[in-house]
View 1 (cartoon, rainbow, N blue to C red):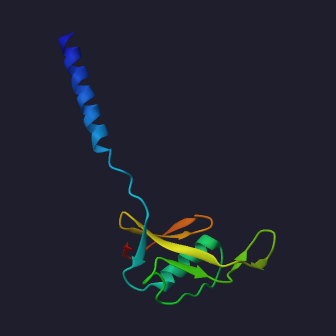
View 2: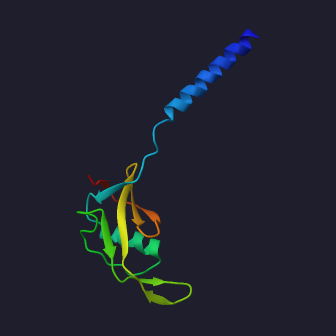
View 3: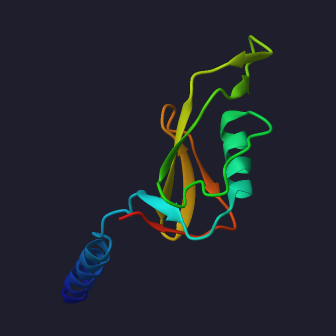
Length: 121
């Protein structure tokens, strides 16, 4: 009986200490800036996110601001071969040292590999 009580107390303490260590909030996505120019990496992510081809961006994309607008992109669509669309807005985000591009309308998000970014203060 005494052994069962000790075991129960130890189990409870372990459980409580485990829960306490996990009380840190989940890291949130923060607006970010690229640390170095890399328009090619951004172009590839946007092409993948939006299902478009031949995106061409300025070399300073995401260097000075965490958002930008892509005007008049041609997007493939199942019902129409190609159609002219309204401008698309994107933002660069960071979470746990990883960089992401997010489409503002759809919230579709994809990681950009092989780049570094920093929180845009």
